[in-house]
Length: 257
Image 1: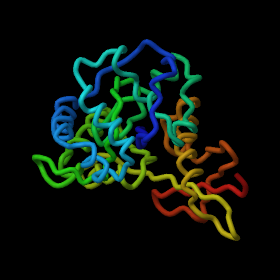
Image 2 (image 1 turned 45 degrees about the horizontal axis):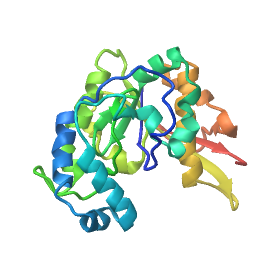
Image 3 (image 1 turned 90 degrees about the horizontal axis):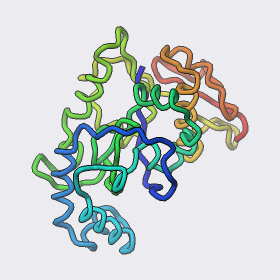
């Protein structure tokens, strides 16, 4: 069983890492091509491309310029610990022990516009490049054409030894579009999280993102490798709702945040 999540816009390179362990991203040769493309953009062009303020655009232009190999603990940080958004708030990896990290490294992947697929302990230099960015490149008009089959093949390789491969899709639609389901050699289960509001269950973005991280945490802490056990997920008041679930879309609801 493999869990996939999206990255986060917010990054934390100030808090010391909880581990000295690290690995290297598998697709740095591809990342380098994207960095070379981004280096041709001015601050104003980056601001327009990514709809950023001039201040944020300037920060990221500086990041592209300083991006360099080799990746070390002096110029990079493990992806799991560098991302700092809502999903990662739910995941809360800051209290993971060595065994937790080992399990996480085996069963979690992070989709990325710049790095393609990241293992949790892969060193990562700071960047801003969302998967939906329409960045013209040598392979096409956007990052989906740039990554092509690479992301899907990476995930297939990771699950190659599983007798009954299952991918738990906890990524956003923007990021999961980089995966080609028809070419993925796995059953895809997509959990959906809904909260009660104004007389009905609705997907509320902030809560749903945090819940994706919470489900990852639940799987990691309980060493879950059988997807059916995820139906017992009960963190923060969520419960599996069979009446709203359909096929491999599993709905989890809660009455009150």
